[in-house]
Image (cartoon, rainbow, N blue to C red; front, side):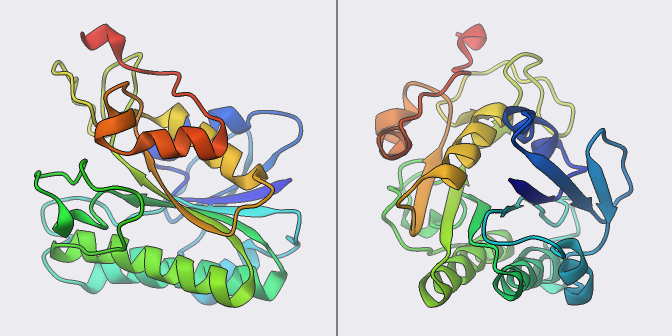
Length: 248
C-alpha cells in the first residue's frame, strides 16, 4: 500500500508513522517545510491543488492518504481565518479532490476534540461522544469541524472509506514531552501517544466495512468510558498500548 501523509515534518507524524514501518507500506511524506527521512519526501503546499495532484500521482484504489497537516499553533496564526483556512480547510478539500481524481479510496483525517467542543461541559471536549456532529468554538475548532464536514461529504458522494480521528492531547509516553518540547508532569485522561494514533490510523485503512466513521482516540484507561474511546476499541479491535502509567 502506498500512503501519502501530510504534515510529515511535524511532531505528530514523526510518531504516527512508526506502526507503518513495515515492508507492506511505502510512505510518501509531504510537508511545506523541508525535512529528511528514510522514506520518500515531498516539499509542497497542501493549499496548492496542482501540488497535491502531483503528490497523489500514481496512486490508486489500493492506496491511502493520511491528512495530518495543521496550521501552526503560534500566538498569531488563529487570530484571523486566513492561514488556518488555507491550510486546514482548503488543504483538506484539495486532498479529497485529488483522491477522487486518482481513485484513492481510503483516507484518514486527524481531527480533534475541538471539532465538537461546543457540546462539552469541559474545557477540552473530552466528554463528547463520537456520535456528536461537528459543533465548534473559535477559529481552530471551526477549521477542524469543517475538515470533518468535508470528509463526510466526500465519503458519501464518492464512496470513500474515511475515518476522522478526534484525538486528545498528543504526547510521547516515553519522554513525556509534547510537540513544544515541554515535559508533562501531570496525568490527564486525555493523554494520547502518537503511536496509538498511528495504530488506529493503520487499522482504519484496513477495515473491510468502513464507510465514514468518527473515532475518539486517547491512550488512557479512563478515556474508554469518559471519552467514548471504547467505541474505537470495539470497532477496530484495538487496545491502547501507551497508557501513561509512568505518570501515575
